[in-house]
Image 1 (cartoon, each protein chain N blue to C red):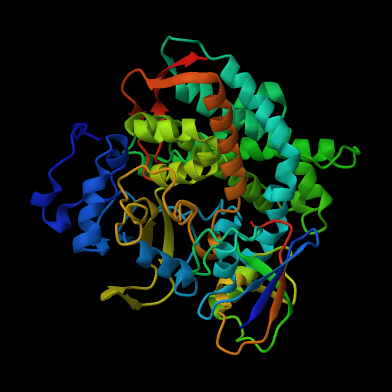
Image 2 (image 1 turned 180 degrees about the vertical axis):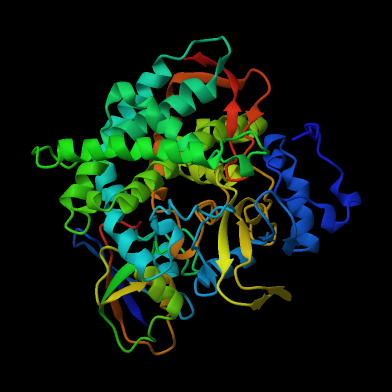
Amino acid sequence: MTVVTFVQHDGSERMVDGDVGLSLMETALKHDVPGIDADCGGGAICGTCHCFVEVSGDLPAPDSQETAMLGLRPDRAENSRLACQIVLAEGMADIKVRLPEFQM
Amino acid sequence: MDAPAVKAAPDYSALPLSELDISDPRMFQFDYWHGLFARLREESPVHFQSDSPAGPFWSVSRYEDIVAIECDTETFSSEPAISIIDPEPDMILKMFIAMDPPQHDDQRRAVHHVVAPRNLKEFEALIRRRTVEVLDALPENEPFDWVTLVSRDLTTKMLATLFDYPWDERNNLTEWSDMFTNDERITAGEGLKREVIIEHITACLQRFTELWHERKGDGGEAFDLIRMLQADPNTANMVDDPLTYMGNIMLLIVGGNDTTRNSMSGGVVFLNQFPQEMEKVRANPDLIPSMVSEIIRYQTPLPHMRRTATRDTEFRGQRIRQNDKVLLWYVSGNYDAAAIERPNDFWIDRPNVRGHLSFGAGIHRCMGNRLAEMQLRILWEEALRRFKTIELAGEAERTCNLFIRGFTRLPVRVTRF
C-alpha cells in the first residue's frame, strides 16, 4: 500500500491510502483533497493538477506532453509534475507532494 | 454577398459532403451549424474544403482528434496565425497565441502572472462592485437589450478596470476589440477591410504607449495590467518592442472581450431554454461555478482555432500537406457525444463539467480562463440574488463571424425580488 501525503500551500498535510491504478490526481479527488483542479480529467492537456514531488521512490520521467505543459508554469520547479501522470503501482514507495498556491 | 439570408436550418442530409460550406459565418448567425458539424463528425471528421473567402482548409470536428492535433505542436503549428486569415507581412503582431515552443512558452510565462489567481483576488471586489452597479441600473419589467446593457457594458467596464484605462474613454477598448476580429473575409463580406483594421490597431498602440509612459515610474501600485508588465523584469521594457507590446495588449483585449461578453448573453438564453436548470441553480447557488463551466461549453464563444501543417502528414487517413490550414472546431468537439455525455443538454451539474474544449487544450489552453470564470460567476451570483425572473422578451440576434459565436441583440425582461 502506497501512502500519499498532500501538503497544501499553507503547510497543512493530509495522508491517504493510495489505490493501485489511480493517479495522484484521482487519489486527491477521491479523498476530496483540495488544491487540484484537474479540468481536463487526466489527459495532461490543461496543467491544472500541478504539484511538487517532495518525497518519492523512482518515478517514470515525464513524457513530452507533460513536459510541454509544465513548461508553461511560471512557478515550475525541478520537482514539478502533473499529478494526473503519476499512477500508483504495486509496491510503489510512499509519496509526498506539495500543491501550489493556485492552479492556473 | 448576394445569397439570401438562411433563416431555417438547411437540410444537410441531402447535400453531398463536397457542397457543405464550413466557411460561411451565417451558420452561426442563423444558428444552423449543429446539423453541419453532426454530419462532419459522422461522415468526414477530417474534412477538406477546397474553396472559401480565405482559401482552402481542413476541418477537424471530433473532440479526440482536436486534442490530438493540439498536442502535436511540431506538426501542427500556431504560426503564422490562429485565424483562417493570414497576417499581412507588414503588420505581424507578436502574440504568443500565434507562436510555437520555445518562444511561445517564454512569452506566455512572462505575462501569465497578470491573470494569475493571486492577482484575481485583488480584482474580485472591484469587479463585483461594477457588476452590482450595472445590474442595479437595469429597468424592471420592461424589455431591454441584455447585450448592450449587461454583457457589453460589463465586459467593457471590466477591461477598463483591468487596464485601469481612462474611464471616459473605455468604449475604445470594446470597439478596438470588435474591429480586430471584424475582417470582411470571415463576416460574409459585412466586416472591415484589412487596411481599416490596421489603422485601428495603430491608434490602439499609440494610446497604450502613452499610458505606458505616463505610468512608468509614477509610483502607482501594480494593480493594473500595464503596471504589472512594467513591474516584472521579463516584461519591464516591452514598450520598446511595439509589435510585442501591441500583440500582448491585443491578446488581453480580444481574449477578455468577445469570449466573456458572449458567454454572459448565452447563459440567459440557456437558462430560459432549460428552465429546470434555472430551478436547480436557484435551489442551490453552490452550483454556480459548475454552471459557469457549462455555459462556457454550451456557448463556445470562440468556435475554432487554426493550425498550419509544418510538413506533409497523414492524419486519420487523410493526407494533409505542408502549409495546409487546419481548423480545430471546438464548437463541434464540445457537442461530440463520444466525449461529452448528452451534449445537447444544458446540464449545469454534469460530470466532468470542466472538460470542455472552449478554452482549447494543451499548451495554448486559454491563459485567462480563471478570470473569465470569475467574471461569469460574479455576474450570476449577483443576478440570481436580485432578480426573481430573467426572461427572454424577443428574438435573439446572433453575430455573423466565423471566429466568434455570439449575440448582437438579446431582448430580456427582469423582475426584482
